[in-house]
Image 1 (cartoon, rainbow, N blue to C red):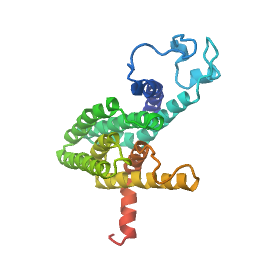
Image 2 (cartoon, rainbow, N blue to C red; image 1 turned 90 degrees about the horizontal axis):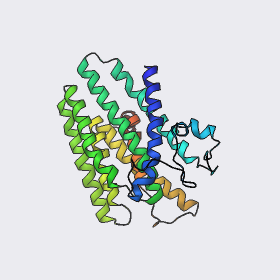
Image 3 (tube, rainbow, N blue to C red; image 1 turned 180 degrees about the vertical axis):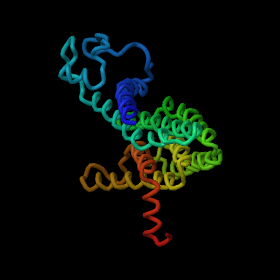
Image 4 (cartoon, helix red, strand yellow; image 1 turned 90 degrees about the vertical axis):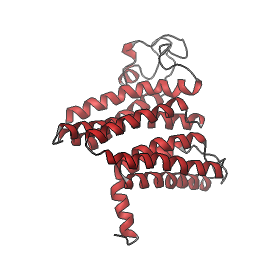
Amino acid sequence: MIAVVGVLGALGLAIGSFLNVVIYRVPNGLSVVAPASACPGCETPIKGRDNVPLLSWLLLGGRCRSCRMRISARYPAIELVTGLAFIGVALVFTPAVVTAATIGQALASAAVLAALLYFAAISVALTMIDVDVHRLPNAIVYPAYPVMAVLVTAAALAGGDAGRLVPALIGAAGSLLFYFILAFAYPGGMGLGDVKLAGVIGMLLGFLGWPQLAVGIASAFALGGVFGIVLIALRRGGRKTGIPFGPWMLLGAWIGIFAGEPLAQAYLTLVGIR
C-alpha cells in the first residue's frame, strides 16, 4: 500500500505541474496542449529537465535557466498541494482497494478512488482560477459531469449496488436546483458557475452518502460565511463585497468526503436525535 500511495503522490505532483498550465491558459481561452510551455520573459521553451515537479524549481533557484527571470513560487506550491491532495485521498481510500474481498469490490473501490483523485485535480484548478478571475470555466466544469457519472456508475455496478446511483442523481439535481434558486434570488451573491459546479459536487457526495452530501453543502456556506465575517472585521470588505464562492464549495465538499459521517452523527447527537 505504501508503494501505491507513493506512486499516486508522484502522479499528483506531475498533474499539479499540468494544472499550472490549465490555471493560466483555460481562463484566457488558450490550448493546454500547444504550444509547449516557455519562459514568459525570454520565450525559451522549457526543456524536460527543467520541468520536473518541485525539483527543477529548487535546483534552478526559482529562476529561468536562460534569462534568470524569477519564477513564482506559486508554481511549485500548486504542484505540492496537488501531490499532497493525492496522497491524502490515497491514504484514506486505497485500503478499500487493497483489502477488497472480491474483484468486483476492488474495481468498485478503484473507481471511487479514481473519482476522488479526479475531483482533487479539478478542485485545485477551479480554486485557483476562481481566486484569480472570479470564474469557474465551463471547459473544466462541463467535462466533469460525464467523467464523474462514468466513474460513480462503474463503482456502483462493479460493487453490485446500483441503488447508490439514486442518491447520486438526487444529489446532483437537488444541488443544481438549490444553487439555481439562490442565484436567482441573490444575483450578486451567487454566480452561474457556482450553480454548474454544484451538480458535480452533489453527484459525488450523494453517491458517497447522505451524511457526506449534507455536511459538504452545509460546510461550504459555513466556511464562506466565516470568511465574509472575517473580511468585515478586518475592514477588508463589506456586506456587499463579492467573494469567489467556488473555493468554499470545494473545500466544503472535501470536509463532507473525509468527515461527513462523524460530523453528521455528532450533530444529530447534539440536537438529541441520536
